[in-house]
Image 1 (cartoon, rainbow, N blue to C red):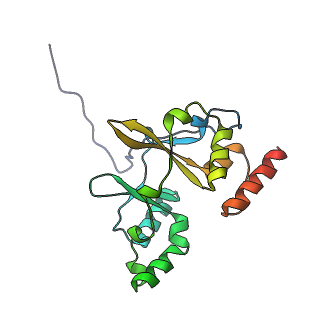
Image 2 (cartoon, rainbow, N blue to C red):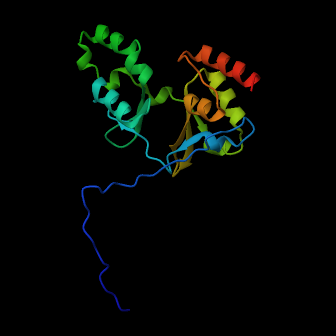
Image 3 (tube, rainbow, N blue to C red):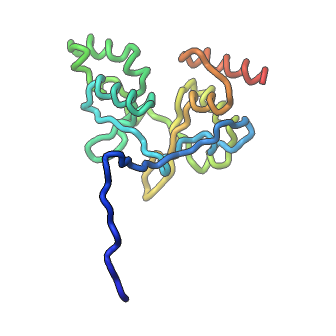
Length: 195
């Protein structure tokens, strides 16, 4: 076998970095496959935080990445929980401050995150046989802004994807003005009834 070195060239200051993308359809209908509204972590990087991160660090990461949810990973690369923008801007930081007698800049992600043992997830196998309408009904019945999707690998449950109410509304072509879940679902039903 005749081998020779591959040609090389220098990068310049305009060089970027390709990143995985999860291109979801711009518009969906309730009857389309549920997979069409799932952010797939096999095709897109999940954004993470550490339990020891400050609220300011988590907030800055969310703003920079344009997301409202971070997976909290422990030192052994296991999911320790989730932290959302609602956690950061809601009552949890004040409760942690009062409960521990600390200042806001001392509150850590671990103080406000939802721990892994309280997280529910949908099996990817079930989702792959469901419709967008099933996703909407699941989020509605659970009163959630997000739902995790898992698949089993090597005897472990691995987070495969994320379903987001705000992303779903965007894809359905409806707008929701409030973050309150109960009002959100009422608004969605009203808008879908007029669509």
